[in-house]
Image (cartoon, rainbow, N blue to C red; front, top):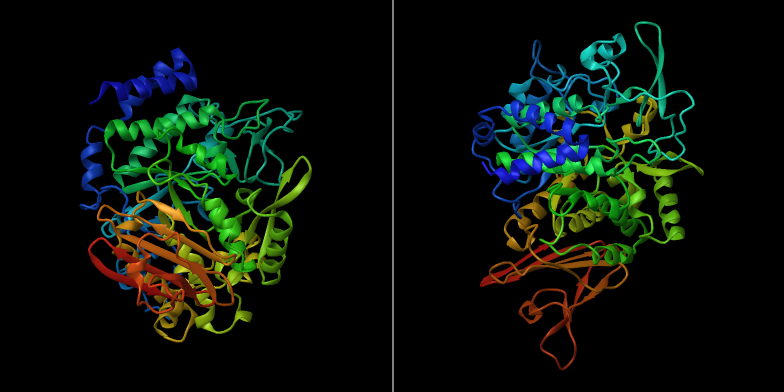
Length: 595
């Protein structure tokens, strides 16, 4: 294998740990690499390999137990939650989603899986590794690698408290008078949590996200090596994208804000270098819910993440839908790197978490965005806060995206679905890998009882639904679920047939009226383009076609208007909340989608 790639790995470890310890860690790392890792990574996916992301790819995000067995399950029926999920996908996915992100599926103590007790086991309530392997036969799997923190109930932490030598310095402790005023805080609870060791000594451990989630000490190379072992094991279990959860916080240095540390970036570069060296069939996705410029820094110089979450997209689209003003969305989208000149974005609107507000800072007028926040709160959304030196500030909106942008007050199922799908028209049109949260896919509204029942606001979008009831609603052609599901199916089917939707195909954001967002994708290698227009307004609106190349070929399509004395159409008329995509050129017939 390429010696220069090995040299890269060694130099990164020396940067992280210094020359002597870095060299020793490098030697130890080489001994960890399973001899058959490359062959297994190719064989595990039953022939489902990365040939480069394409227009045919989309990702579904879900909890392993987001569907509950039927309320009247057969006596003695013990099919696993993951098996139920697999069966549901076999009936309803129908090729829409090529990737499946199963949120943490290990034993855990809190945070719906993100407080991991054992990284090598599957939560017995979900199933086992065979269930994961079965899912890998039909979808390319996305695994979470929760690097920053783990559960206080883990064997690792118990060993640490008992003084087990192998776990010495595995976690970060600080004295009671530690000054944490410069440390960036994503949460409002105290940074340090007190624990009592087996010998009676009281210690204060670093807990970025909650008192149940203790932060690992990556300054100890044994911690890094253990997670590299887990990294290799995930590949062998079928991971095709590795999501690095809360990666921005993993390296702590006193006197700094302890976010985006150069050694944090170096660890991401190290994982990327291992993938390149071993030629693994694996992509890295970084999860950093921070302002846009900080977020895309995890792409590095093309030597860190393959994909970066597009965290600014959810609040900008939400604002467009609520305010009927897509101007901030258009202005921001024009600043995105051209396809192939920067990160491949992991585009999403909703997820298991809320809609982060930090990424929208400076992108929307503060007063206008306060009006949007007020509206979604009136619609039943909740607001979470984080601590800063100036006190608590809003951090994220907790909601069902559907309920926030398309409340019942807008009208019936058809109208509400149309508004919701207009938002996703932007998601699917922009360059990147589109990702849809399971509850969005099946048209779920917010679970209003969830936060009070479970004690945390994010529960509003994490309801576990009876599988038979969901399927009955999907089969009901008049239901909101069916209208949303059908719209997704149409858009994803159309998208797969147009190479101009490739993550690497050009995109041009078109000038438009306030309520319209329009993007021109392509040309693809055959010269074909797709015009994608979404009207976020409750009234008809016009999209001028003067910036659309070869728009004359569209002549004769419905709702195109032509100036008197001209043969060329000069505007496209869009109905309220209409999504309209038109594929043209490249020697093929015009293809059109209207929702």
